[in-house]
Image (cartoon, rainbow, N blue to C red; front, side, top):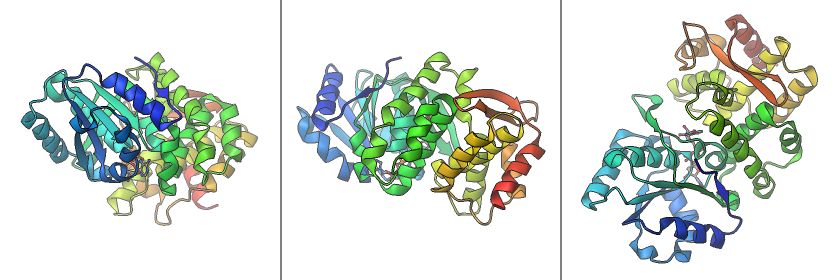
Length: 346
Ligand SMILES: NC(=O)c1ccc[n+]([C@@H]2O[C@H](COP(=O)([O-])OP(=O)(O)OC[C@H]3O[C@@H](n4cnc5c(N)ncnc54)[C@H](O)[C@@H]3O)[C@@H](O)[C@H]2O)c1
């Protein structure tokens, strides 16, 4: 498992990508139409034999993590006679790295792939850790694989063109990493201007490293990797409810709300102290609000669908104090309800 490499200029990133593409019989590049317009032109002219790269473009957004889109890409590969020594480069946000990683992991039982994440979520989270997936029948990531890319190449400045709502979404995961593993990173995130991509870009590498270190220790998520689910138990339930009433929230927004609730639960249970909890609440409430129509009874059914549950108990990753986190903590749902209701009534 190799670590992501950071490249602080387009030229440097292109050089490394060029090196990694050598030896492949054919190179395919998967991207979405936004990234094709805003990021691809920064890289393509810097690559030798760029005209030989077979570019596959899909629509932006979660809807592209779908079987029909896979079908279209598999068909493209088959028509191009792509062999097992072909290479797939996934240039885009988490949708492209999840989709492209999945396709590469199963086409002809697996071909090599490289992630070049372009969103903050992609750089700090989705492209790291070897999970791939697509959605089916409204269930997120229900089809997928664990598959490790040949390389992950990151140019933090790609986020310059990323819309603010997607910056916020990735920022929530950075805050999560800081709470579970790095109090100093949290202190830094508290004072930066999140509307300023240059400020955020400074902390991407630290956030990425946190995820990588945790994944390296527990690739198959049998133990410590579960701390990355902090904020996600409640977050996923809120996300699923909002989706079910046609008022979707971004994944990061839902995770930020989940972090708020689960941090409050931790405080109530004698984990996080008041000062730490207040800092988390102050930082996240600046950018993320609870949707007006979302009550505890609405999200409860979705909590029982959580894949982390065992024997009908809801399990959480709960910080013990700033910088450390426990996993598989069975918590009485009344605790979760109390934290949730206090927050929505604030
Ligand atoms: N595999 C994992 O471990 C993992 C972890 C977290 C999230 N995810 C998945 O990641 C997805 C969300 O990722 P995302 O937030 O990156 O969504 P995304 O890929 O849809 O990207 C967000 C938007 O930003 C655009 N975009 C991307 N880079 C850009 C750039 N540099 N400039 C301008 N626009 C740009 C995209 O076109 C898209 O419209 C979800 O499907 C989620 O399930 C996976």
